[in-house]
Length: 392
Image (cartoon, rainbow, N blue to C red; front, side):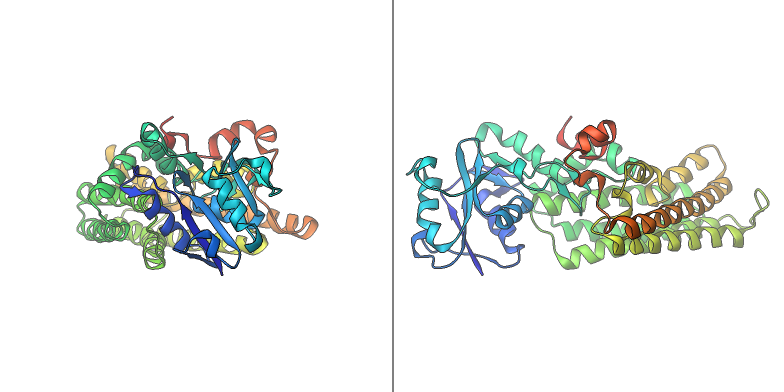
């Protein structure tokens, strides 16, 4: 077990959390690390020493633990992962009681840590920033931006970042938990199901769109306030996976008597929708067996395709636009056909990936390549992060 010790104090709150509270929550989520209230000099094992006046992400601290040594912000030590014999020297350096030349600890900066983050499909250096009152707003922007996926659908990537940030701020200020937001989304999802079933399509689109918005808010709120939980994760992702085909099915049922469109009846379209959706999810799950990368993060093509893949948000756009022009049946048919076509594209990508795995070994994301910004400049600018989430 590695003992973690927080040095110093910061009175600045970011997303309604003090630095000490944020660090305590972050450390609680790192396996093999335990927050210690003992003075560094009394620690007898390996230690993680962290200055309270610096802002970190969990992946910053995990990267430091993997590498070991002093984490530097320019010439200023911000944290250290050291053996027991180095604790006192490291603590003195972090307190400013010794100069960096006074010891032989290895030094590294945030840029030396792994930039690719698989869960969020982004590739930016881990967060390391000095906390000052004048920088509070900018640091909150950095935290929010770092919580946002780089590869996702176009609605989440370009429509939701700004309004979702305002909603996250309200929730953080009012101490509304991410799980409460997820439960509100669950209620809205069920309301949309009922309204679609009753043929009140316009009324059903209102809770449906609100639910998709809250699906962005709960995850970002969990990350900026460090309140992620296994229960919340399973509830959120389980709901995301299960409900879309029910929405499409109930939308189709509401159109009775159903007149075939483009030679396809209700049963055929429903088979394409549900079968295509399940196939897509299974293909995506199978891809993880080929290496530490998701299907949509493997190559730039896959990242671009994720913007419009037949997941809930793009399909909801199709249904809304078709209803706007008075063609709800066409909306149902287009969702069915696009779902089936998306899964065929994903199946083809899986086949290509299997061949690559056989020839070259486990797959890696193109974003994990240190040369990614040079090899794929436009794609890297687009998908290494979501710029609108940072306020730019």
